[in-house]
Amino acid sequence: MSLEVSIHSWPGSYYINNEKRWASGILSLTRTTLRFTSEEKQENLTSLRLSRIMEIKMESSSLIFSALTVLEQGNIKHWFGSLRPCRTTVFHVLVHFWRERLLSPTEPQGAEAPLSKGQELISLISGAQRRLEDTGKVLNHQGEQFDNMIQGLDKIESDLSVADKLLSELECPSWWPFGKLPWKSHQEAKSEAAAKVPYTKGSGNGQKVILSIPAVISRVGNSENMKPGSLMVSVSSLEVRDANGQLLHCFEKEEVDDIHVHNPYEISVRQRFIGKPDICFRVLSARMTEALFVLEMQYKKKVEITRDYAAFQATLATTPGSPEGGGNIWSAGHGKDIDVPVEVPAGELTQLQLQVLQPTVTEAEAQELKQMLQQLKNLALEAETELERQDEALDLLSCSTDHTTMNINRHTSRMRKLL
Image 1 (cartoon, helix red, strand yellow):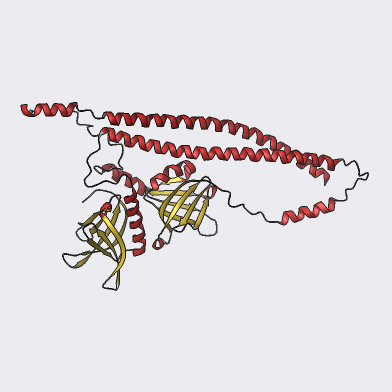
Image 2 (spheres, one colour):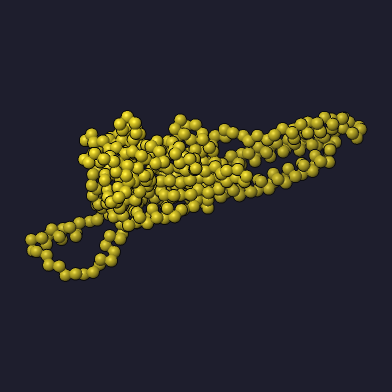
């Protein structure tokens, strides 16, 4: 049985065509395969690679019992029934991972040959480059927020200068010889009316989207109602949308209480309330790893790693040849550097010497690594420049905020004297 770790599993039954009977067990979805394990003997009854699946449908067996069918290459149809919590939930999850797997540019074909040292290095640097690009996007959005704040403070200063002129006119009008101002009662009435108008939070601020990934969405406590949708990460919020793009819920950044990471493909976002039920959504996506890095930067201490995730990672570390194991490329020969005398036939000596002398990184791979490292350097320099600019913007914001606060307090005191 494959040691590849399961992303999700459901109890159900599988139709064994040879024996013309249904067998109960567990249907499991992994990163690359769909397998069914029998409940009695714990044996693998079927194992399908996602890349070989041609169609996934909801059908009925004997025109009565609802079932899920998977059509494999070669027109081999597999029947799964009695799926819990429900057939529709399993269907949405399988279709999502199957489609994303087909669209993945790194889809393995057949039995994968082990990657060379150069290819492993290229893969590692490519991952670092993607992370640095995501960091750059977050920094750019943060810089735009600082620029908008500076523009807002400049507008406030301009309004305060106008208010200063108006207050000066009110404090000593040259054309009114008496002490009592006739418009005082009218201003008080307007102030009371304005105080009664409820404050409404502005919408449609045009927040820029950092990342949007397709996902399978469900409300916690209603696992039977898993539906396709998307998770949208913006600068100041998390949005959960359905397949039609309709907003299901918007978590403002300050309203998110915790984000639990169950495995590299599944998270849950919670907003707590006092006196009423919490709002919690569970999000399952084949591209969740793209969002986890951004979420970790945006929400920091609110991201919590669960025990399930730790078990998932531990299983990946012990899985031979796992593409997600990572970090194992340097340990291939660890603990095996013991010199053992071996007799080599004379005819095979030349071939063995050629194999030993063969470089682990080819010239083409070295050139690609050089280009990627140069791009990494450029990205890092751009990030450093942006951080320096934002430091200066923060200093300017701090000084402008102090000056604006002082002017507002002074104008407030002058207005109170007029009342």
